[in-house]
Length: 339
Image 1 (tube, rainbow, N blue to C red):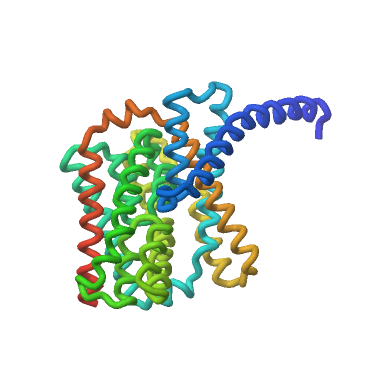
Image 2: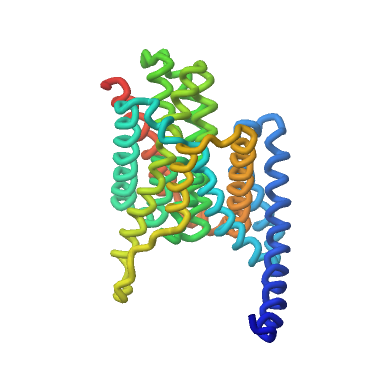
């Protein structure tokens, strides 16, 4: 290595690191507040990710995010989030997917595809911005906030759209988590069928687990596997959206459709987790690391969200999210009862 080049690269690297640190510290503080707030009565129902978005928004819109923290906030929002999504692959094995049977996989896949298409189509009909509609579609049909974040990497929507989508998905996912267990006896669902319904229709992984185990161990286990099967379908959806984004681009350079590295890595991690037995302690540590990094990324999004921009969206996106919530619940329940 050329000593002169090394001399120039050293200060540049140090400067870049120094630029990231203030924002990273601020994001870490917001994340710590989210985890602490979850221990308070009344907030335990919400995941740290959701609380981090809210805390970040409050901080940003009341105090304002410092200019010198922008680099670290952007680092948290992009790089940390992508790495966290890759780590989610350690929560799933191909054997778990097979455990719910071909019928269960079919229900999950059909529900996901139908809900995604329904939401995109309805969004176009009622005049919701296409990128925001895609975020709501991904969050409802796949896996809540994580899917919204992953989808935004290829759709490149505004930060306010991401925050709006996360808030809407959280609202209706929480309603489902609290209400669906009460509906199981009404619809004559046993533990297995209720687990399939919950796993195929409720938005967030944590919400699915909360609803599933409320109706028994078998219901909880079935719901978790069904939900993780939906998580595995995140990769092909993101790839498809990337291809659509490339086709809709005005760039005529002939560049290949985007293939985000984190999607490839996610699939590779699922395959690795299926072939190699990861020790329980390491698996737990990885799951915690993924959750913390997802929380930091969403805290960063909250820090960049402008509430006035959220208000400017009006009620149409909320109507879209509510309609998608009803559709996925009714469609998946119909399939569960028929299969």
